[in-house]
Length: 307
Image 1 (cartoon, one colour):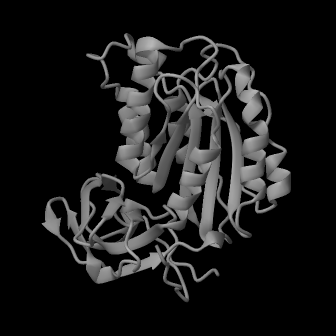
Image 2 (cartoon, rainbow, N blue to C red; image 1 turned 90 degrees about the vertical axis):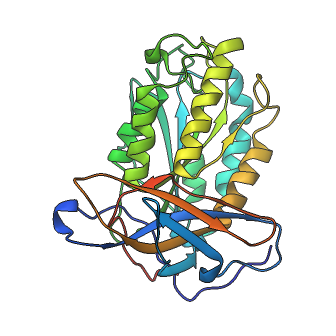
Image 3 (cartoon, one colour; image 1 turned 135 degrees about the vertical axis):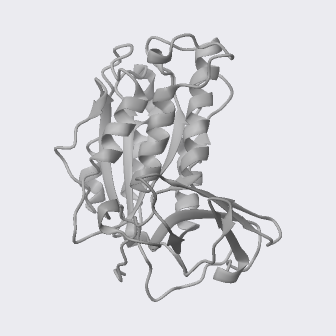
């Protein structure tokens, strides 16, 4: 599809406090436009419902490359065979558009080290990729790690940006018990989704097997959870059947393409007792699908004119 050039873009940054908001608040969310159309969608092409009530969009602008923050969260318990993908990951980061900020972190013991910060030095960031430790279950739960990270997102107030996460993990939640098809409603996964929605983060993932738990029901369970997170936050879950991907390169290309087709939608939303509001977005444009978070935090918007 062709893209519209915009003179300025509103960039998502969840910094507002409910205590500071009275009445309807300016709110923003990320919307990926997956379209086969030759014309980029306009504001009037998108309809929105907030808590079941139609709400007009007030702004609609494409996210510029230098208004993007991408956090790679890699499970430190992955099989060491993921080492063959290190060159692919490094090449992806090195080729990012100028100005895109990148963070490389490893999920371990329920958290992600945030001693580093986002950087636009892509060559330096690429060197942060390393072999995982390969100890089964070392992440504790990737969803504990995700929750902790998005609640303490490393920020630079001079460079606000639209927030994206790429998780590389098997997605299994060992704290939710059995991986049976009848037990796919983990409270920890739901908490991670809510925390990401509250922070305005789009979460995508690439499934890759753990050094310990893998195959069969575990593969199904992990992929099911990763799909739930992607659907709830407006991201995508990438995987190939029950095995590890032959190469991550096609998935990374799709991920980057999705970012390039992401817009910031602005609208009004009224906070109530610190609750998120439910969202439903749609378009009548032929061959066009929208991906968006299923809930957002009212007032999580900040405007920037960075180009």
